[in-house]
Amino acid sequence: MNTPITEKQSATVEHDFLQLNGTDHIELYVGNAKQSALYYKTAFGFQSLAYAGPETGVRDRASYVLSQGKIRLVLTSPLSSNHVIARHIQKHGDGVKMLALSVDDAYEAFEETTRRGAETYMEPVTLKDEDGIARISGIKTYGETVHLFVERKDYKGVFLPGYKPWKSNYQPTETGLLYVDHCVGNVGWNRMLPVVKWYEDVMGFTNILSFDDKQINTEYSALMSKVMSNGNGFVKFPINEPAEGKKKSQVEEYLEFYEGEGVQHIAVATSDIITTVKAMKSRGVEFLSTPPGTYYEQLAERVGKIDESVLALKELGVLVDRDDEGYLLQIFTKPVQDRPTLFFEVIHRKGAKSFGAGNFKALFEAIEREQALRGNL
Image (cartoon, rainbow, N blue to C red; front, side, top):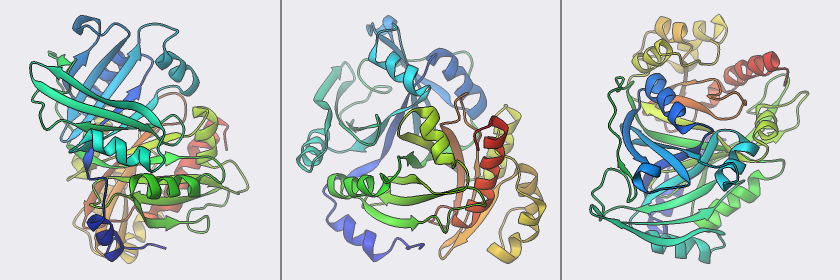
């Protein structure tokens, strides 16, 4: 059911009460932010941007801000065992806490969404320092995940008030990552439709694509997914839930090890996936295994002519799919922590606006091979 983004989404733009400018930043709660920051710099090519902690007057946590292209990652660790962040990490392991969205008015965004039923996470607050003012508010979404609304049009500082520039002598070169394409959430049994309705009612999002268990399945497992998008298409959140299968699905494994609902993966865009993936692999990033040789033998027949070398794609394990508007290339990392939870997708769009439905079988079989090695299939 690949519904193209046409009149349905255009109509949403005209009546879009929640004007989003894109992803402002993504904050992860992690066990050791200093070491995690070194990993993301080395492996992904992120650059040191800002820091907040005891040295800047923040007494209960340390946060390192990394950037590449338009992507900002915030890595935060608590400084005591009884901190709420410590309890979050003890339960979930390293994972995404904040999906922060850029808005023109954080106060209005909060008022509009809470009036439509959102539960408060952070009352609107105005933060100030010598570089100006920023306004932030927040609401709860699935699991313990939060949407922050960030208004920074009157702020000229490095990140937000309370943060100082993070100077480092270690700055590995970037790998070509440009922006956050989408973030995927995993929710529990029979929870997808209520979460979809929440995004429709509270955030004004539209369901632009839907996949059922007949489309996303293998011999052993299945899942269902709906892609939610805001009116201008700058923010997209696919929502997955498990479906009945012979064995444990990837979503079930995630829910078991994350101990609840949360962000499954972050998709980051590039304009040259071959160069980006080669760079990331050379720095130690592990990707899912290459699909069987027949996948690439049938590629021309399945997706038609592409600009890239099929041999180069095969060597790297990059997947290709086509829709009515073009094609896309994508590849998925293995989990970036010991729990089989959060991972990353690298995606290169050549006109396509879909999410690689033609690759689902190859992708899920690769995930199942990893699940089997972990004893979780």
